[in-house]
Length: 128
Image (cartoon, rainbow, N blue to C red; front, side, top):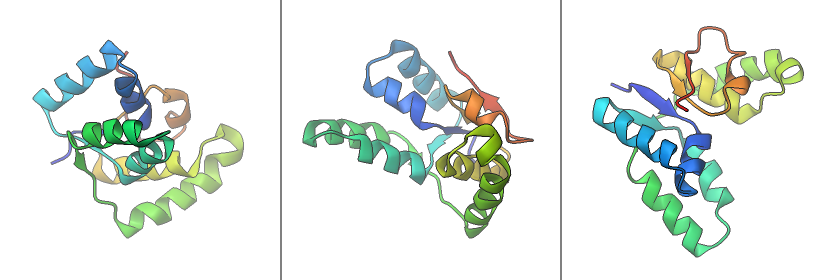
């Protein structure tokens, strides 16, 4: 069972060598089953600026299980996007992460809590 969904922001910090991020990720792995969403994986892969960075991204992602999406996540994400895009400025990727975490009833760990607090019922964890 999934205990926590990890957002891109925490993994970017880990790639940048931010100690607080690495500490949180290690603790999360010891205490439960944190997972990454395919949209997070895609954001990190797209953000790699060369083979060296891509290798680092793939090495980091290999430490976590990839979360399986369900068709309902896409439908829910579009509903959330229609509701929150103009008022909250959230992206479709944010909505997809939120939809999946809501379906699983698990918290989402992020540094961008402003983007995710608009989703009613979603537990947002800001680790540092």
